[in-house]
Length: 189
Ligand SMILES: [Zn+2]
Image 1: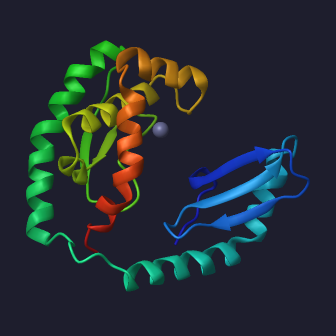
Image 2: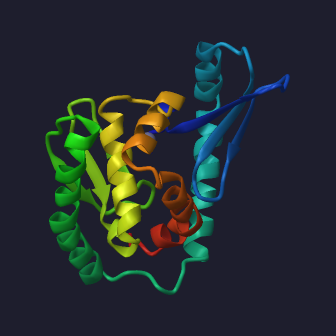
Protein backbone atom coordinates (compact mmCIF):
# COMPACT_ATOMS: atom_id res chain seq x y z
CA UNK A 1 0.00 0.00 0.00
CA UNK A 2 1.06 3.56 -0.47
CA UNK A 3 0.19 6.02 2.22
CA UNK A 4 0.07 9.61 1.10
CA UNK A 5 0.34 12.46 3.54
CA UNK A 6 -2.61 14.16 1.81
CA UNK A 7 -4.87 11.24 2.71
CA UNK A 8 -4.25 11.81 6.38
CA UNK A 9 -6.57 14.11 8.23
CA UNK A 10 -4.71 16.65 10.35
CA UNK A 11 -6.46 17.99 13.42
CA UNK A 12 -4.73 20.73 15.37
CA UNK A 13 -5.81 21.57 18.88
CA UNK A 14 -4.58 22.87 22.20
CA UNK A 15 -2.89 19.60 23.02
CA UNK A 16 0.75 19.25 23.98
CA UNK A 17 1.68 16.07 22.17
CA UNK A 18 1.31 14.63 18.69
CA UNK A 19 -0.75 11.49 18.22
CA UNK A 20 -1.98 9.06 15.58
CA UNK A 21 -5.27 7.29 15.16
CA UNK A 22 -6.41 4.72 12.60
CA UNK A 23 -10.20 4.47 12.53
CA UNK A 24 -12.13 1.32 11.74
CA UNK A 25 -13.21 2.82 8.39
CA UNK A 26 -9.56 3.03 7.38
CA UNK A 27 -9.14 6.78 7.83
CA UNK A 28 -5.94 8.01 9.43
CA UNK A 29 -5.91 11.01 11.72
CA UNK A 30 -2.95 12.82 13.15
CA UNK A 31 -3.55 15.16 16.07
CA UNK A 32 -1.02 17.89 16.72
CA UNK A 33 -0.52 20.98 18.86
CA UNK A 34 -1.62 24.26 17.24
CA UNK A 35 1.81 25.51 16.23
CA UNK A 36 3.56 22.23 15.56
CA UNK A 37 5.52 22.67 12.26
CA UNK A 38 4.12 20.73 9.33
CA UNK A 39 7.51 19.27 8.36
CA UNK A 40 7.76 17.75 11.86
CA UNK A 41 4.28 16.29 11.47
CA UNK A 42 5.32 14.78 8.12
CA UNK A 43 8.42 13.30 9.72
CA UNK A 44 6.37 11.91 12.59
CA UNK A 45 4.00 10.26 10.12
CA UNK A 46 6.92 8.87 8.10
CA UNK A 47 8.49 7.45 11.24
CA UNK A 48 5.23 5.68 12.02
CA UNK A 49 4.45 4.32 8.57
CA UNK A 50 4.86 0.75 9.75
CA UNK A 51 2.54 1.29 12.70
CA UNK A 52 -0.07 2.92 10.47
CA UNK A 53 0.09 0.14 7.90
CA UNK A 54 -0.27 -2.51 10.57
CA UNK A 55 -3.40 -0.82 11.89
CA UNK A 56 -4.81 -0.29 8.40
CA UNK A 57 -4.40 -4.01 7.72
CA UNK A 58 -6.23 -4.75 10.94
CA UNK A 59 -9.07 -2.35 10.04
CA UNK A 60 -9.38 -4.06 6.67
CA UNK A 61 -9.52 -7.53 8.27
CA UNK A 62 -12.20 -6.38 10.70
CA UNK A 63 -14.21 -4.92 7.85
CA UNK A 64 -14.12 -8.19 5.93
CA UNK A 65 -15.29 -10.09 8.98
CA UNK A 66 -18.27 -7.81 9.43
CA UNK A 67 -19.13 -7.49 5.75
CA UNK A 68 -22.75 -6.50 5.13
CA UNK A 69 -24.94 -9.11 3.48
CA UNK A 70 -26.15 -6.68 0.82
CA UNK A 71 -22.92 -6.63 -1.15
CA UNK A 72 -23.39 -5.60 -4.75
CA UNK A 73 -22.70 -8.15 -7.45
CA UNK A 74 -20.31 -7.36 -10.29
CA UNK A 75 -23.28 -7.02 -12.65
CA UNK A 76 -24.96 -4.56 -10.32
CA UNK A 77 -21.80 -2.49 -10.09
CA UNK A 78 -21.44 -2.50 -13.85
CA UNK A 79 -25.05 -1.33 -14.22
CA UNK A 80 -24.45 1.48 -11.73
CA UNK A 81 -21.33 2.56 -13.59
CA UNK A 82 -23.20 2.59 -16.88
CA UNK A 83 -25.95 4.75 -15.39
CA UNK A 84 -23.38 7.03 -13.78
CA UNK A 85 -21.73 7.55 -17.16
CA UNK A 86 -25.01 8.93 -18.46
CA UNK A 87 -26.13 10.91 -15.42
CA UNK A 88 -22.98 12.45 -13.94
CA UNK A 89 -21.49 14.12 -17.04
CA UNK A 90 -24.84 15.87 -17.51
CA UNK A 91 -24.74 17.23 -13.99
CA UNK A 92 -21.11 18.31 -14.42
CA UNK A 93 -21.99 20.09 -17.64
CA UNK A 94 -24.88 21.81 -15.89
CA UNK A 95 -22.87 23.04 -12.92
CA UNK A 96 -19.49 23.85 -14.49
CA UNK A 97 -20.62 27.24 -15.91
CA UNK A 98 -22.33 28.07 -12.60
CA UNK A 99 -19.05 27.48 -10.78
CA UNK A 100 -17.20 29.13 -13.64
CA UNK A 101 -14.68 26.40 -14.43
CA UNK A 102 -13.63 24.20 -17.33
CA UNK A 103 -13.00 20.51 -16.83
CA UNK A 104 -11.25 17.86 -18.89
CA UNK A 105 -12.14 14.21 -18.48
CA UNK A 106 -14.80 12.55 -16.33
CA UNK A 107 -14.09 9.05 -15.04
CA UNK A 108 -16.49 6.81 -13.16
CA UNK A 109 -14.84 4.59 -10.57
CA UNK A 110 -15.77 1.75 -8.28
CA UNK A 111 -14.30 2.90 -5.02
CA UNK A 112 -14.66 2.08 -1.39
CA UNK A 113 -13.22 5.26 0.00
CA UNK A 114 -14.13 8.29 -2.07
CA UNK A 115 -17.22 9.83 -3.61
CA UNK A 116 -15.33 12.08 -5.92
CA UNK A 117 -11.92 13.53 -6.61
CA UNK A 118 -10.22 15.78 -9.08
CA UNK A 119 -6.78 16.52 -10.41
CA UNK A 120 -4.93 19.74 -11.09
CA UNK A 121 -5.35 19.00 -14.80
CA UNK A 122 -9.11 19.29 -14.40
CA UNK A 123 -9.93 15.59 -14.57
CA UNK A 124 -12.89 14.58 -12.44
CA UNK A 125 -13.57 11.18 -10.88
CA UNK A 126 -16.85 10.04 -9.40
CA UNK A 127 -17.89 6.92 -7.55
CA UNK A 128 -20.54 4.82 -9.32
CA UNK A 129 -22.17 4.24 -5.90
CA UNK A 130 -23.50 7.79 -6.17
CA UNK A 131 -26.26 6.22 -8.26
CA UNK A 132 -27.59 4.73 -5.02
CA UNK A 133 -27.94 8.16 -3.39
CA UNK A 134 -30.61 10.86 -3.89
CA UNK A 135 -30.06 13.14 -6.93
CA UNK A 136 -29.34 16.02 -4.56
CA UNK A 137 -26.36 14.13 -3.17
CA UNK A 138 -25.01 13.60 -6.67
CA UNK A 139 -25.32 17.32 -7.33
CA UNK A 140 -23.63 18.20 -4.05
CA UNK A 141 -20.64 15.96 -4.85
CA UNK A 142 -20.43 17.33 -8.41
CA UNK A 143 -20.41 20.92 -7.11
CA UNK A 144 -17.84 20.02 -4.45
CA UNK A 145 -15.41 18.64 -7.04
CA UNK A 146 -16.00 21.46 -9.52
CA UNK A 147 -15.26 24.02 -6.80
CA UNK A 148 -11.95 22.23 -6.20
CA UNK A 149 -10.93 23.23 -9.71
CA UNK A 150 -11.00 26.78 -8.37
CA UNK A 151 -9.82 26.09 -4.87
CA UNK A 152 -7.77 22.95 -4.18
CA UNK A 153 -8.48 22.84 -0.46
CA UNK A 154 -11.28 22.78 2.09
CA UNK A 155 -10.88 26.34 3.26
CA UNK A 156 -13.67 28.62 4.40
CA UNK A 157 -13.48 30.26 0.99
CA UNK A 158 -13.93 26.90 -0.74
CA UNK A 159 -17.13 26.17 1.19
CA UNK A 160 -18.44 29.70 0.55
CA UNK A 161 -18.12 28.96 -3.16
CA UNK A 162 -19.81 25.55 -2.78
CA UNK A 163 -22.69 27.12 -0.86
CA UNK A 164 -23.05 29.93 -3.37
CA UNK A 165 -23.61 27.43 -6.16
CA UNK A 166 -25.46 24.85 -4.06
CA UNK A 167 -27.12 26.42 -0.99
CA UNK A 168 -28.48 23.08 0.27
CA UNK A 169 -25.00 21.57 0.31
CA UNK A 170 -24.74 21.05 4.09
CA UNK A 171 -27.97 19.06 4.24
CA UNK A 172 -26.81 16.55 1.60
CA UNK A 173 -23.28 16.41 2.90
CA UNK A 174 -24.85 15.33 6.18
CA UNK A 175 -26.92 12.70 4.39
CA UNK A 176 -23.79 11.28 2.82
CA UNK A 177 -21.97 11.27 6.17
CA UNK A 178 -24.81 9.30 7.71
CA UNK A 179 -25.43 6.80 4.91
CA UNK A 180 -22.24 6.86 2.90
CA UNK A 181 -20.26 4.38 4.92
CA UNK A 182 -22.87 1.69 4.57
CA UNK A 183 -23.08 2.27 0.82
CA UNK A 184 -19.29 2.03 0.50
CA UNK A 185 -19.36 -1.28 2.31
CA UNK A 186 -21.67 -2.68 -0.34
CA UNK A 187 -18.86 -2.34 -2.87
CA UNK A 188 -17.38 -5.70 -3.79
CA UNK A 189 -13.67 -6.35 -3.95
ZN1 LIG B 1 -12.90 17.99 -1.27
